[in-house]
Length: 316
Image (cartoon, rainbow, N blue to C red):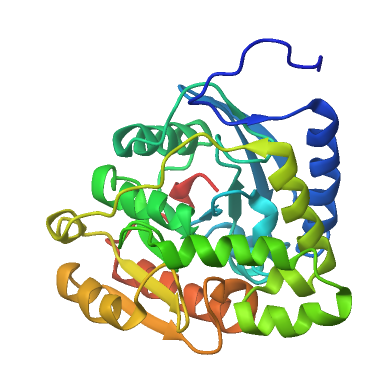
């Protein structure tokens, strides 16, 4: 790919240079290696660009017949963020991890899609291109906003939604941005100090060398061009009828966990909400065994309550 010499659009995420992009991809590969090996990778076309997709699977034919899981990562990262979760999830179900256009990753962003209707259209088009008629959708942080937004606007193919310390429930406050910047500066701290800073900031990035390198390289390599998403209103959340699972870190700085523990089940009929202790914004990274087990149990319950259908009909 030649170096980009044209003027960059201000509403499209982009890499600063091909050299930094390639360095970021190499850092991502080191993180992917910590999780389950992808069975395959593919690109699907949407109205907003090319979406790169990682497919994980099990050697168990019965697991491959279950309704698949689709993973949507957080802002500023890629599907490598799911390395603590892909082994357990793919042992039980087919798993697809999507690199969101507009974030660093292998997707190619061509049209803005930060608006709720466009974001929902992108996801629907990507799932359609993958041949997935029914999925369990899981999103973290900004990806949490994407999956909640999907349940609100285009729930037709959703078997369930799991939102991990998500955006979309509250306006992103100053305390969250302070934490982001403090965490980034802490990645430059001497190695001996990083465990203490990681505990203080609830930031696992500091103690996983491969993850630290990926995050630092991504910040240098990629420019995100979108505003923070606006939270869904009570009425919008109340419109959701998809089985809904909310998991938050007790010390989250993105949401107020106790507030949402009461609010979400009150607004969304049948919603399950829980708080994970000893973690902040990354419960699925800090406590993967616990969170993986909770997610899989919720999906199993959602499937058991769904209308009877051919378990292989999801296009896994």
